[in-house]
Length: 155
Length: 155
DNA sequence: GCTAATCTTGACTGGAAAGGTCAAGAATAG
DNA sequence: CTATTCTTGACCTTTCCAGTCAAGATTAGC
Image 1 (cartoon, each protein chain N blue to C red):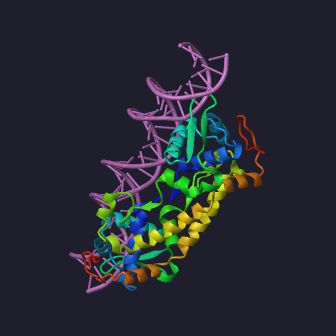
Image 2 (cartoon, each protein chain N blue to C red):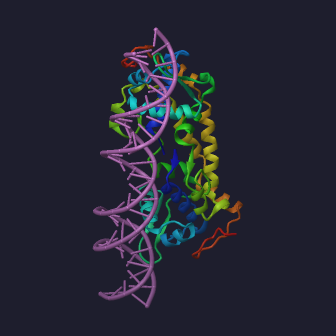
Image 3 (cartoon, each protein chain N blue to C red):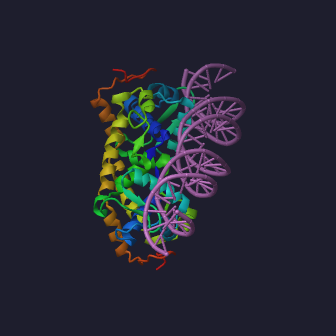
């Protein structure tokens, strides 16, 4: 059970937007340089975030991506679910109909019942942390704020 | 973020042992038949569970697998960590040294700090559920107890 | 309206991991 | 001795992850 790079990159990119650019559209290359993420890959990631209504975009010069909602209303859980399709397992329920069908134990599956409870709790935990909380932690860790290229985090 | 089949099978197999066989060694084929798991794959899974000191084994006629500890002391978290190597992500910390090294933001990585907190909480949730809790749920769901082959769960 | 900057769309790829299968061997009960 | 059951480790197929790339659409500024 691990978070994919995609999700970690997405969280870092969103943190970056929240922390560095206040409302302004931010271009991919700037984020990629600051957060040390492959720019081409980041494009793909932002498409997912856009589909999930988390960010909006603007093309052309001075374009870029920006948060669609305020940082207080965007949770880690929303991001994780957007990138990974939620917390799932392959027994009795989940998004895949074929998997559900295949599980003979259906509604009476004990492990599924337990895991359902656990995933509800996990989502609650992840929804308790917002982007503004991330930004706050950034302040606490005393990160350097810097709009230019280069690594911001090297003291 | 999904649980692998291996983990789900492991949980079902352990539940099966707890629920159906009281202290007696249970053979793989019986569990596989009841739980509808590929027998060859289950062999492999039990090797992992054995390495994790969760089950013991006995060879020869009337051999099989059995719990090494009482069901009250075996948690879902222990099983998940045994099968999946813990809750991890690929930034700044984790089991892979190279990944840690690669992450330039190191100790000041905000997302890592947040995810560390979340994984601690997740482990706590999973450690709050034991095998005996699973068995209890089995009772509640009024499963048929049956030592012979065949699906036990079809009312 | 031209041009440069920036996102958009979608195809493509190499490698690793998931999800199994199989065969030959070792131990043990009866 | 023999049938049963776990043990070890090699093998295979398919899917997905992580990442690259190219060509096009849109917009700002001159």
